[in-house]
Length: 102
View (cartoon, helix red, strand yellow):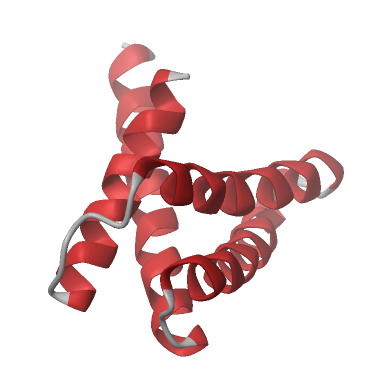
């Protein structure tokens, strides 16, 4: 649950900066984070680890569609926001796994 709220906060911050407005709302951001994470996790479960980028690309596309629908952004800007979010998510995950493996 904590990861879901942190993800929603990060994605909301990205959208707020891109749109130069307020935080879009927790409910919308949680739905968008789930739209990004669930397809990526399902695909990555079936693909070999070397192809994890395919899952991320599909997750970014799904999240871009959700962001566009819920926040009123263009699909291109929403896909950019989703890609930035997933890039930050991967960087944080790799950093935490490196720190915890020591």
